[in-house]
Every structure is written in C-alpha cells, then in structure tokens.
Amino acid sequence: MAQDKTEKATPKKRDDARKKGQVARSVDINGAAILIAGLIALSAFAPRAMDQMRRAMVGVIDLTTRPDVVNREGIGELFWLVGRHVGLALLPVAGACFAAGLFAAVAQVGFKPSPQALKPDFKRLNPASGIKNLFNPQHFAFETAKNVAKTTIVGAIAALALFPKLDELAATVGTPPEQLVPEVAGTVMAIAQRAAVAYLVLAVIDFVYQRYKHEKGLRMDKQELKQEFKQQQLPAEIKSAQRRKAMELARGRMMDAVPTADVIVTNPTHFSVALKYEAGTAAPVVVAKGVDHLAFKIRERAADAGVMVVPDPPLARTLYATVDVGRPIPEDLFHAVAQLLAYVYRVAGARA
Figure 1 (cartoon, rainbow, N blue to C red):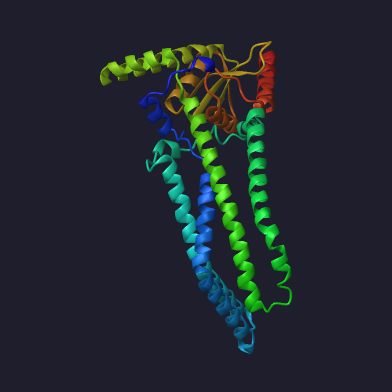
Figure 2: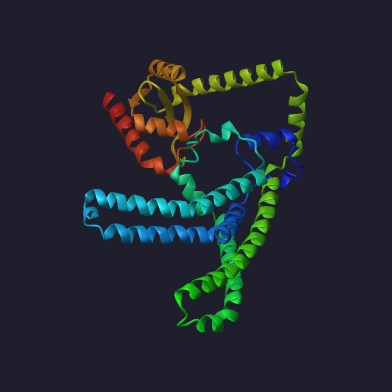
C-alpha cells in the first residue's frame, strides 16, 4: 500500500532508480536558464548581430543590382550570403543557450550517464499509455494550475514593467530609426529581464516540488527494507543463484500455462505470445511469451497440447513489447485480438 511506504529510500534503491533514468528534475529550470543566457548573450552580442544583418542586407542589395546574378545560380549565392550572415549573428546566442541548458541539466541531476536509461522502452512508446498519463486527473489538474500560475505571474510582472513606460514609448513617435531602435530594444530587454527573473523563481519552486515528489515516490515499506537488507548480506554467488532459480521457476510456470492458452501468436520465427481468454473477464491475458529459442519451445509445447498457432507478425511483436506475462492486453489491441480469437473459435468449431 502506498500509505505504508514511510521509510526513506536506501542508497541501493536510489542508485537503481537513477540507472533507470528516474531522477528529480524540472524542465522549468532548463527553460529559465536558457532564457537568461539568451538575454545576456543578446545584450553582449547585439551590436555584432546588427552588423551582420547590415552586411547581409547590403550584400543582398548589391547582388540584386547585378544582371548576371538574377538566375538560378545567383539565387543560390543569394541564399548562401543571407544564411551565412544570419548564422554568424545567431551563433553566439545559440551557443550560450545550449551551454546554459546543458549546465542546468547537469546541475540538477549530476553528470552520471545511464546506458540503461537510454535503451528504448516500448512501454513508453505506447500511445495508449501516453494518452492515459496525459489525461490523468491529478497530473492534468496540477500541470494546468502550474502553467496558469506561471503565465499569470510572469505576464503580470512584464505588464507592471511595461505600463510605466507607455508614455515614454508614445513620445518616440516620429523619432528617427537610428535613435528609436536602441531605445525600444533597451525597454524590451529590461522587461524581458524582469520576466526571466520571475520565471527563474517559479522554476526553483517547481524543482523543490519535483524533489519532494521524487523522494515520496522512492519511499519504502518496512518489508522492502528487510528484504533488501537480507539481499545485501548474501554473497554475490548466492544472489546470482537465487535470481537464476527464480527465473527458472517463472519460466517453468509460464511453460505449464501454454497448454491452457487459446492461441499462440507468432512472428512466426522470432516471437511467440500465448493468449488465454476466460468468460467473464475483461480482456484476454498473456500467459506466456518468448523470443527465439524460448519462442520455439512455446510453439513446440503448444503443438503437443493441440493449441492453435497463428502467424501475425505485427500483433506478436506488439504484444511481446507492451504486455507482461499475467497481464491483460491493452484496449487498443482489443479489436485485433478479438478477430484472432474469433478465427480460432471458428476453426475449432469446424474441426469439432
């Protein structure tokens, strides 16, 4: 029970969670760091960026006055000229934003890459699971409230900084462009800096909440602590033997369930998934699954028990990747599995 998990997580559980990519981090911290770094870079490199833009404009005007350039090759030269100057203008700002985002990410979780977290997880790629998490009432309500509060606070601070300067901005009507641009740019930069500071404060609050939420999710109950303590006291050889024995027992129970299945869905050579449906249950259940050699053993056991084997590569791969043994199939696969079972029942009835 979740309410029984009152003990702090052990170092081993923290390490295991980190290897899986489960860390406390706030995307708002990254966003605030990138925004502030971008504003600083703009303040520092704005004259250089304006000079590059001026060169691009002068170069474009110069090229368009030459008749030999107004052709297919000239258009390519024109695009190259504009792209080069725009790239040189934006490169310092983009570099500063990239460095700030990287630094913020490392500052939150530390620089400890986890190869296991980089492995593709088909459960995370399942659209049904993503939609279910997206519209989770608690998650949706919290994220909505957070985004509304963030937008309201940042917008209010920007508005409070802008309103006192409305008269000054109105007085700039008719000002020459060479005087108007620096003045407006300074006003916009000052407003953006205040909004960025407010965003950073909100990001820190969100990070504190994410840390609390992460710690709460890692809590353990007393039984888990006892079990982990026992595991730590055992030699590595005994632990390995226990895991091997547990895997053998689980595989044995799985193979014993194959004859009770209604159908075996195959790849047909690499994957095998055994499905069983009982009247009164919500959905068919995966009672066994395997790949390569184990898949062959499942098909062999099914043949001995007279269980029908049906090749359906897409369905077999999807079931193997998304459904654990002993779990019912997800709703998005109901239609495909229902058609398969209907076919199996028709064939069985014809044979009878």
